[in-house]
Length: 405
Image 1: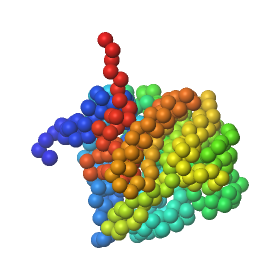
Image 2: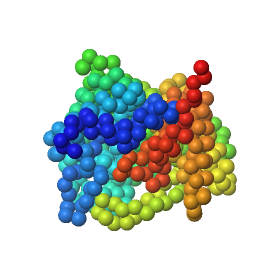
Image 3: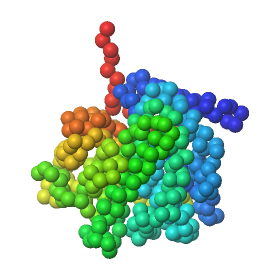
Image 4: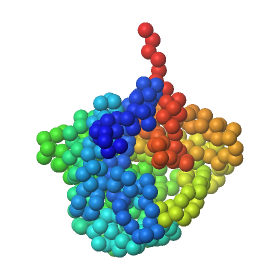
């Protein structure tokens, strides 16, 4: 709609299409966590069809921002602020969606463009590329320079809003690599989780300095992590596997207790259910089977029943709360899915979600957490086949209590 002012287009989308006004009125939601980045390439090989991932791309080249995309982000921040939502923007993604660390490696010249596109078109190639290359993301001066160039332009918009209490450095950072997967130290004697903790806290302190240079008070800085630990959980658990997840190459204890103190608020994600699958098409048009779920966190000596997975979820929250004790923290994502065969079972799934999301929210508060985010609100074209909810469904999850006169 190029004939209409951009601000009106954004307002129409948020109010009339996503119906966030209605969600604010009927649902007990006061904050939105959202991607404040889009590093996806505008152009690629002839077979490459980025479709929805390229809309709103923020960079024409590595050094050239797309003015229209940043104007749209600015309007988005203003409109959501006027709706009185608190905003938790995420500055980057570990995974390939809308960019990812491989995109930064390609920009910095550490990865050939053709290999980057190859990884986007094949899950097997993507996994291999991440395991071989992700360490380089955290040690490359060239990558860090580009990262700060890009996120600095986003921060210039964010710091003008008074409704941004938390900024996440990255969505689900980690570094699965040949060393972490085998539980070995790096050649210099440090661990993969040491490397990630240092990088995250360094970026956190840089964000705080950015705000102060602008004469602004810095918000809380979050790693945006899921909550993995290198060592076993500090509580005896009945259903949650008690071992640490050293293979993820990240440790929440090291991140929040780092000497640099750049990360000031903890983050937890949770998908405590067995593996579920859905057929999808990648950007090259090929069909693949996407898998979701943390079934591997269930102890091997208990039955894979819904009851035990629900207990696993409670233990996950309680142990993360114990690990974050003395620090503020929140649940950045939570989702529940379960294999179903017909429409009736799907309706039961939605009912179970409503019950569990409410319960997890209460458990989070009981264990020192500040609040929870539900993953996720479906857009008009961008719909999550596993956890996506409409505005109306979200409103039933956390309904606003009617005021008594």
